[in-house]
Image (cartoon, rainbow, N blue to C red):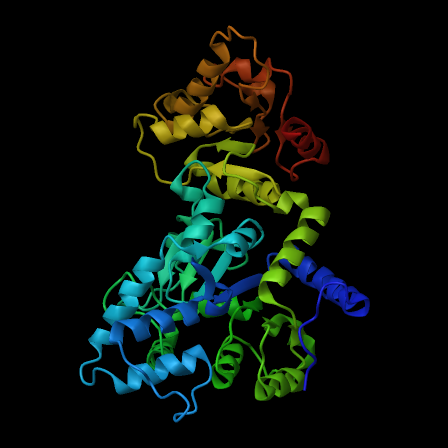
Length: 472
């Protein structure tokens, strides 16, 4: 059997944990890690602090006002006890069971302790979260900690129990950005509710074994409709946190999202990293035999250690609040593919970037949310090209953005405040040169302190360093 949970202060184990964390952080930095969040990490504060399943069980027993003989039916864990209640009550129909669960979850909405989910949500290298609970708390935590001026940079959620099944569509997940980016990077954080959500309908969410079996059947029958989800998960390291799944379910999930046998050592790390404080013997043997990397550590302590280590080593990976210093890219839609490449390079350097990627009609008025984004950005980057430098561009949306940022620069600043106006750093595309520009490109852009850069051969280190200097 495996040893008990590692305790802080156990030097040998702490050193081993740190080494494993370093390897994990390296993978996180590549964008290759997907957290799968289970019920064991979700806590409810209601007088005392409860595990979610424990809280559901306690309140469900109160709803039925009954005593259930768990011992007679060999029910030890809260999950087994919930299954027992489900099997012996309201048959048929069983809607009463789910109505009670919905009521209990609704009552818990404002009682969740989100401390550790918030820490995970702040690690900006996580772009996809899998929610293996029926709660909405992961979604809300990610929205709260990833909110970024407009909903474009907010969490985008999908529910596998919706009809029809929802895959992670390129258009939905990354707002019509070219498929050339897929599947390596999602421009929008995605929370995939693998167990559905309790607030969707009366029974369209996962609570007990019966529901899990239906979920597995649905996934099996509709496998071809979930290609994107499977591709993303099978090409990533899966970080199971608080997923005290039944042994059989853990085996199923790990193999389902793996491209090859678990005994193939070359891909063991990319298969799964399991974090659980309580592992039964069969599961422990399975993990050992599969050589799956296993952090035998309390989930909350692990998250805190991971967050602290990333904060110390890679502070730019941590999003501390929604009001961050960010870059605003302004461009013509004809140049979107090239601008996406610029976005990628800036994102790889851990800069926060606002990029409006919706189709904009010529002549459309600049929206309040875009004005707000320009008002609050640290650096405004106009992407200048042959497509932007024509007389016909006067009514184009990017031109309105340019006019607006110049309006900001021309405003009186009675308090002589420094740093309140965005710094303008132009980027040139398509080998266009400054002396080739017509009157349609504001000359003011080139009378400012910084001259800008060419993106033909990639953004120069000097340009990147200038951005870092301005951001501070």
